[in-house]
Amino acid sequence: MDQLTGVTIEAIDLAAWAPQALDVQAVAFGLTPEEVAVRLHIVGRHAQQPGVIALGAMSGGRLVGFGYGMPNQREHWWSTVIEPYLTAKGHGDWLDGVFAITELHVLPDYQGQGIGSRLIRSLCERSGLDRSILSAIDAETPARRLYRALGYRDLARAVRFPATDRLYAVMGAPLPLREPTAR
Image (cartoon, rainbow, N blue to C red):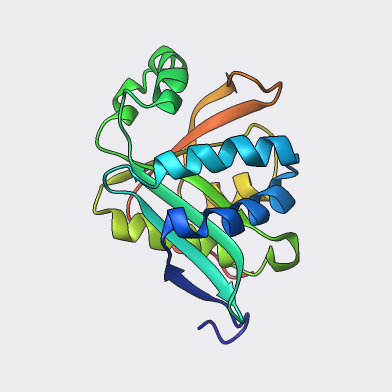
């Protein structure tokens, strides 16, 4: 347990914790009930993927943050969307042999306490791979600042995913991630 936050990071069964994880994501990311319902099915599929690693940030038995990822596969939907953007920037090799951070969310009341950093670092340490890749909203956000502080760099920007008007950035980092700087 982190003495400052009272939050522990522990492995979770992604399928079993999916409803609670989606509750966290809905608050942290502003999802509608319809979006939560769709994502519950997606998380259920992801929970069955080989090599998936899921971690929860727990405070008093309550899930206050979570993250999960898996070794990237080119045939996965996410990879097929980002591949042309990465290839255009000369980064097509970032789809192979990398650990994809699929979701990482912390409840707003717990943000800014290093929990997201602990989650992503723990996920990447457990992956056994040499690089990590993720996508984030393409704006100057606390999440993007965290990722850069940990060693992620932009591989492609202005990436468009179907069914959203938001633009995303795809970021990659060598592992292990850098130590976060003191707050």
